[in-house]
Amino acid sequence: MIVPRDPHERTMKQATAIAHPNIALVKYWGKSDVEQNLPAVGSLSITLDGLTTTTRVRFDESLTADRFLFAGGEAPGMAGRVTACLGDFRHRVGATAYAEVESDNNFPTAAGLASSASGFAALVVAADAALGAGLHPGELAEIARRASGSAARSIFGGFVELSLVDGGRGIETRQILEPAAWPLAVVVAVTDSGPKAVGSTDGMLLTERTSPYYPAWVASSPADLAEAHSAVERRDFEALAAVSESSCLKMHSVMLSARPALVYWNGTTVDCIHLLRGLRAVGVPVFFTIDAGPQVKAICLPEALERVGRELAGVPGVERVLVSGLGGGARPVAG
Ligand code: DP6
Image (cartoon, rainbow, N blue to C red; front, side, top):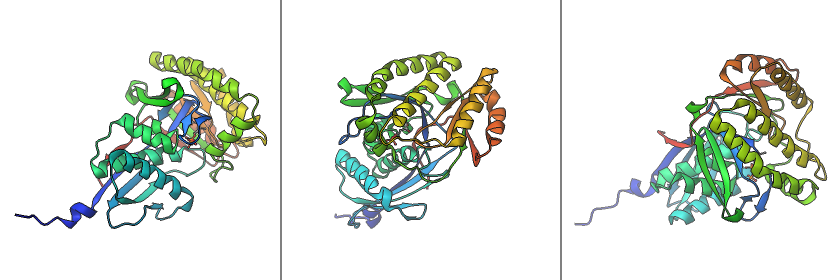
């Protein structure tokens, strides 16, 4: 007997996933292969729980192209990267159907809060769940990494390390500590919620081409990674603070020494740095990090959270503060 095919089986392969942004403590900045989007340096991050991207992917054999909607509207700026990532995914699992993707964030996009990281992590996890492909998290991280280097880290929760392997020709991403094993808190001071002036990819390429300090930045990264990894294993806040601030400031030094210079900070960014350095000098367990934008991320022990949040909110020019703990990796959800 021939069983007629259920039309829903063919058209309704869909799933929803959530992912959280991550904040690098040892920074990724620079590519060894632009085509493959291979990072020139490893990195170490914490995944947040307070900020969330939710993405629904629906594969449909009747579609003639991928379609991407962000916050309910067309997003032409991102559509090309989403299509490329889906193409990579299809190639990996041998799928052919195009997909409709709907995504939204509960935090400001493109403002140095790593929305591409949570976006591509949620995308590949939702695509995997929709097709029941069952890829290993390391494989999902590899696909996400091609779309955006930092996205590989949002596949995992807690403390995450992305290491270069194979003489730099590949990456390996893994969790090094569960979020509950060292529940740090994060306060993001939003000093300008508009989109950033120069995106990470363009900024990295400019830096590599023009900063005389770029080779020193790359050469110093493995020692920073080892130091941060050890600090995390020992739950040594002071050691993690020292290496994280140093990695952040070295990254901004190569940005500042590019031609034309990449100045991601504004005056409020600098005021927040001084405030947080002052607090640590009087014994408050907090340190700062800043990505390719003007927001300041303060990492602290839970007992300092209330004070750090209050003091940052009081800095003139801080539009608002977002508070988060550490969270889990990208995962499918009902919906
Ligand atoms: C400053 O992952 O956005 O946030 O791979 O070009 O998409 P692409 O870059 P992206 O770069 C993140 C840079 C950073 C530091 C970090 O997250 O490690």
